[in-house]
Amino acid sequence: MDREDIQKDELKERLINISYDIVIIIHDYHIPLFQDKSYNILSEIIQIIKNFNIKVIVG
Image 1: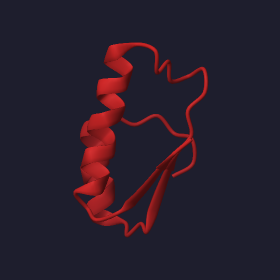
Image 2: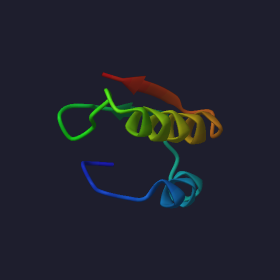
Image 3: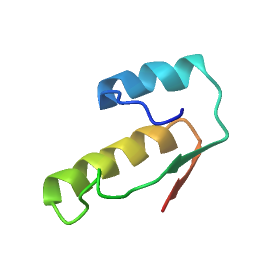
């Protein structure tokens, strides 16, 4: 996926329909990781991806 805004609920549907080997999550000023809410949501997204046996790189 290129930079595209999707809801985390839509993520499962996309992962079911398309086979990915790896997902790379690039964080910058759009993802303020110093906020607990952002960190928690990112953790949920990573867990959803890992449930599909897909490798995750965050950088």
